[in-house]
Image 1 (cartoon, helix red, strand yellow):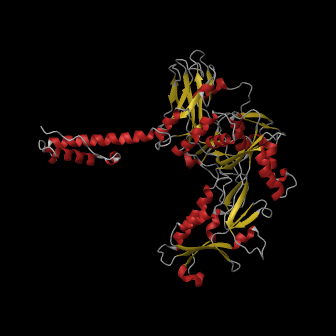
Image 2 (image 1 turned 90 degrees about the vertical axis):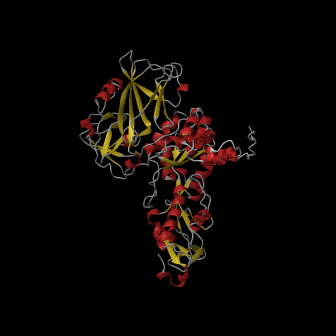
Image 3 (image 1 turned 180 degrees about the vertical axis):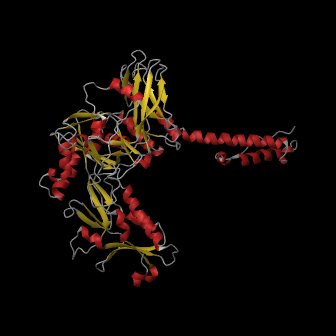
Length: 612
């Protein structure tokens, strides 16, 4: 029998080109070299069928080999399931969905006597089918019998979009690190931080509340704690201790789980939607039995009748719903969290923690120490704005009074941009975090911060950015110049695009740039110009005045502090650096399109007949 040649002489990277078809062709070619085999040339033969099975089997194996070889590496993984499994080895828990939060105002009427009251957990509003709930017991004090604004309530509490649901009771097996997977249904969205656990002891027959922990390995043997982890299938796992690190569940213990079901982005609401809505007490047979045993007998809980004496409203809209960490987010955040070991020490530790845990209310954050604050923001207040004292800035005064002590040298300043879109400039202060949001963030930070530091969640100085050009030899720069300035885009005479199409793309390009800009990020006009030119069919760009014949080639911007426009305003066509405490936004973005003018290249002498 003739010997079959075993030397393939294949290039080292030839495996990447193998698929079922190429492998089948290779087998047939090899068999054709031996006259003993002929069935491979006939598609209906047994030999051909066997070759098909072999070729397609290897095709499938090569696919899985390629997937597992790549997806097993932290730096290369692209599938969420695989990245989730990889970071589990360093005890990293990916952040899942975070529901919208809502700040509110509240007033108690004269029928509610002066006293200290507690609103029971999970109490909710139903606003046109959209629910907003309290996630814990909320205590407030009414000081007079007459109508009174309940500042103690509205300044420290938030409403969370969604309503709490009861998961079916689970009987514990008593295993080490016992794990319960919550399976509420494919279409149910659970808020990442909205999972509570109560356990009825098999030996005591009494309910007790267990608390959430970042890691069971940090807990004592008797600590009633549990971990929550979003697994690779985006289902939440509740993990209990083993008796050494965290208390172990006893066989026969009954576990009750309550989770906050969110409506996702459909649950976001605008201002004044909550007006005159009444609070409803959460009440089910199971929860009432649990609550009766865990409640503090010394606390005066408000009744349903007394709830009707409190009127709620919301002057601000809700924050935006957060979809959860992506693979790239996990790749960026996991090493940072592992380095902190659940403690906040460096500036990056604080920034990373705030971004991860408050993504539903925080868009961006910058953290500085006291030295950087004095050399930056305080210097800006005193020298640029010419304030006689730093606290003459109303936002600085507010934060110092509400969130700082008298000792300033150990302060950590966290500048935060809320996750709320600013579409109008009628109220430049609308994009600050509310006191209740700041209190919520501070309560989480204080559990992990170093002992000697004090944290202040600070408000940035917002900068309005608009089209603007002027003659410095004959004019004084003011923000009103932007009202008589337009951006002129000249469409190429060979273009087949409509004026409307080009205008829409230009507006979207500029808005996208400022939507994605970060706190303290430089304004790069070249980047904006290039994004406009990438649209194509544009022969030139210029900034023109409508009240004079002045025209400046390229994109020219006026940038000013909307609260102190006379003291902090610049005009530039080359970009500008922005310090950590400033955040630029597109001025009056809703009407920005009115300032974009599209003209035809062939009709520049008669703009009025060719503009859009």
